[in-house]
Image 1 (cartoon, helix red, strand yellow):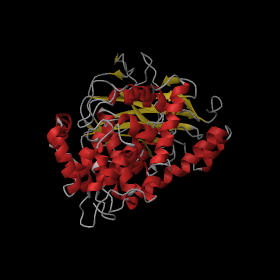
Image 2 (cartoon, helix red, strand yellow):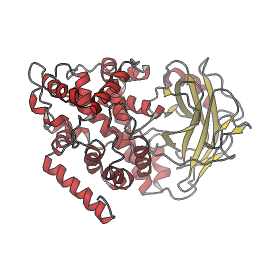
Image 3 (tube, chains in turn red, brown):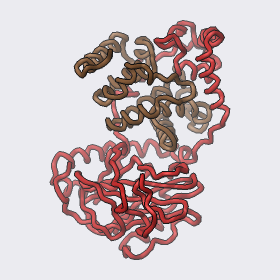
Image 4 (cartoon, one colour):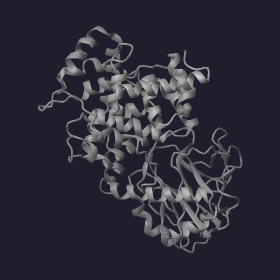
Length: 324
Length: 162
């Protein structure tokens, strides 16, 4: 499979920043002149959130600060808002290790989605290409728009990574069998959704989404591997485990992956660890276990100390119906 | 923070709260945390477009806004998330009591392209002036006015803004 991260919109920040209009009035010595005084108030005469942010974070914005100091001394509403922001700032932020790890990867990762986004459009436009194009791309599948929030099926038919019986969270459709972590896999065929469990059949062009529940915070990565290809990241599609917060209910992840036309077994594995990690840390073990895998055989522990859930699907090449 | 000196760790520590508060206008909970990371990754990728003469706060604010708008393309999510989370952000003034803002969030937002959605968000949700929106979006105040007029026309055609 191939990941396709978020779509890019050329009308947004690139255009805004590069057209030369953005100028915050900063002078050579780093100060900000007074002409921004009028711009700090909204239409109701209160300080904009952006101006308050600058007030807090730009000590050299002298003109801005003078203007706001005068307003804040007379406006309890804005002074209260500023206090709330200061209180929030008092809690230090810990830089997510996953973010630091991406420092050297960002430009590489950025290039791939543009190519495959084009491929996804081609697939949508011509159903036949759904079979031919992924093969041309190395037997890979094309991921969906990561923002696509496919509605999830509810109820006892929910597929669980464990495939075991257990209580079903009525509001989420995610089956929980105890423990502190679980994941549900859902397949959308273009018209309907269904929960899937190990051994189920999926078709080329269908897409799989995820619902995750975690009782404790940690780092989550969902990866996949077929019977011969390289392991790939499903969520986050950067390949670096992302933070997952503890929550009483399962939530649907924004990521989804579309199956390619290469028939065979498709193994999807969700890992939740206490420490940051990345696909590279489990790739070898995952590919060794996944290639030629027996769907009934459990995957070995990919990362000691981590919660691990998996599902093995049988993938057939023929699309069930024209792709939408 | 100057051009060519983008240390994502330092920038995150210095301005993470700025981005988090902005993202919380659109998302909540763990999803907001994910989006904050995405915004910084976006900023990391786009660091060449940051000009040292600009305010890093304004730049990150804009990157965060645009990223959230792009991410919320699905119209149902746009409506649901903004309606649900546009209230309780530290430092933000709740505007959901404003009938214009309510109509914009409830129905218009989902029907607009990104340019109009951005202008409408800054105007109806953030309450910014035409001039300030123009500076943020990178167009003239007249263009801002035209886009708001288009939003109003759309609203009127649907029984819209008072």
